[in-house]
Length: 397
Image (cartoon, rainbow, N blue to C red; front, side, top):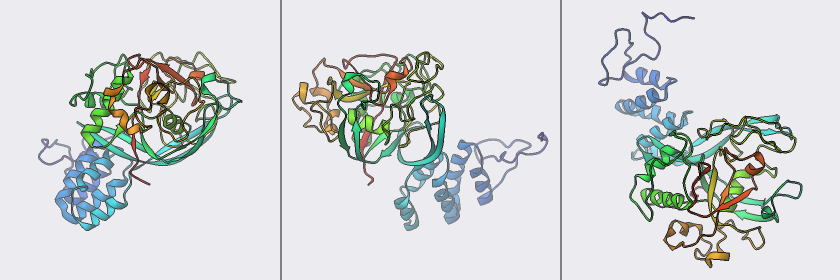
């Protein structure tokens, strides 16, 4: 049905004091106006309505509390920010019981890469405000035990053996690889050990993953973010990364026995197993572009950019720790006492031995994007296929 240009539209309300009133605008006041704007499909309109709701006492607070369940993470965070410092018992009770959650699709594919199931799932997270509207979403990863490494049936590299059981404590991990917007926000914070260039990525875009970052760059990012927030942010251990990627699966990919370029960004001219050729995009894609996550709610674990891990490289898993900590004994004489939290103090590191990268990139074939695949480069290496995501200790149980 066509719109009549001479009649106001449903969401043409004007926020008082911000703009002159268009001739055809419908100005809604009070709680009815706030409710109308909170029903808008436009996120920015809903966020503005939350601030206005504060003018209307208990009724307005009730609307802000309801917005904690909004489908938009930005709206949820805006509501939380308005409520978190208030003293009312009702609000404290709501925030104590409240957990940030998001909904996502999890799919599985067969050996040819054909989708054979799609389910809705939910995960908990917390938002870290980096300033100027830039938010880092940290997803809760429940602890557990899994078999690390490639099983015998999988086409693999020798350094992915032997499979071994590892127990991992709960932690939080970035929902996506660190984006260029997030990188720039943190790169502008005070220096800890190393200088950081704020605009170093080859493929530009604020929602694309940051790349051309070295391991040292990534560790400095974690140190600055830790200082800003008071939390301990760090690179994941290699074990944490694989545990988070697999999300309970034992197949080559968290999607199942295969992967397609409809699900991830990799070099689609190559195939894995009985799969089919796909697209070779020759560049990174904005994080979360494919709209599907693993069972933990993490996106882009296969392809797009390889991700730095904390550990030095070992050529196989003989003697690997079974507790999820950084495996540093071989070359670093256990500087960290197997405590990953100490890794943010990178000034003690003085070695050219390789550091781990996981997950494959836009330039890698599917074989090199598997959950178990490992690669290593010296820590000052940079590439348009190298990025990272961060983890921090879990406060929820």
